[in-house]
Length: 454
Image 1 (tube, rainbow, N blue to C red):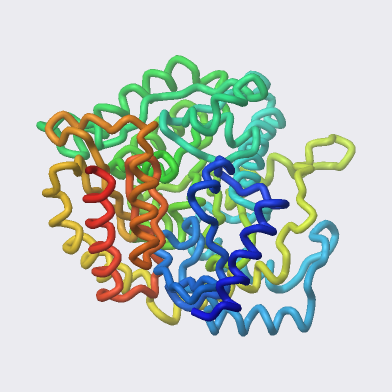
Image 2 (spheres, rainbow, N blue to C red):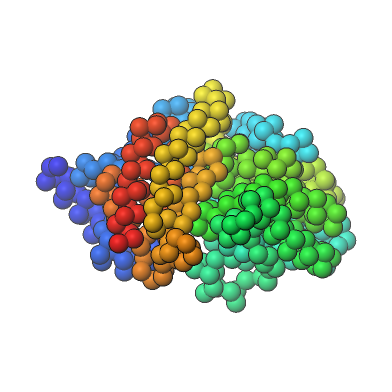
């Protein structure tokens, strides 16, 4: 490492701490835990100003699918930059947005016919909630204004999306600002009776949802759910049967089903979209994060002609869905998303991921025997390890002990970026990772658990 590079890193940290307020961070932590200025990224690797490299084992908050500085996505973005950087989508359109909408609809079930562009994951959820409520209002169902979500759920940080979330760490401070939502106990299979299979537990837990729907359906606009994995909710997972049963109940009781695929979409759970594993069609599908391969902020809502037609009317009726963002369907972001879909098609990514996910499963199997591991769970390219104080009782460590921070620091010292959620270490890598790199990450995770549970 050169003195110049080392000085550059120190200078950047000093300048940053004077002016930048970082997300999801208690800034006082940086008195003890140094910021890491990143100079460049290539493939699965990030490199800092001192020449240290880190495997991006969490895909930079779950967005990076095909590696940093991907040559093909770079090429397509550069090409788009020479033509059009941005234009409003009200009264105007452009080919990258049209191409992307057509392709996403083609990847969806037959009933999905329309694509509404938004800005990021949280804004997609907000727009989906408004769309569902406004649909029922236009149809004359004025009492349908409530939303049902699951305990331990997370749908975003804007006030609407946070209202249907259920993690106190993010929500409790702002409760007085939010709309009231209905929370039903999660089918989280970590909490199942040891005599039950995941499917049996999930079916039992659905009865709680059904009872609420039966009682409240006249005032409920939609149920919003993260299919299969509650990602920010400590990567807790459940069986696909839940979505099938929920779809049937929503149909019977005239309620929309919103699938929040923001974190689990685009191949993360083993299929292109997680809801596919239940063979259902949601009324509204929210997409973001991996949609651009990790390059640009972009989100979309996919929905049905029935939803669209409820807003299609004379302007003077004031039934239009007047929701917008300045950078809606930005052409550069859409080009990145189209390039990402190109890679899925050309590289047969979903099939390749099945091989990688099987290798992850085999490599993780030994960790399940650790005396302080209460659970190892996986859906496709999402794996999680639950650190516990007592394996037999699944007693958790006190969150104030911050054992996940110990694991994070151990990972960095060993060239792997992991960012545990409380006592849960998860592994959600870019899809270009190879088996040797997977083994390295899992070896580091094993060491991190040893350190964190001492």
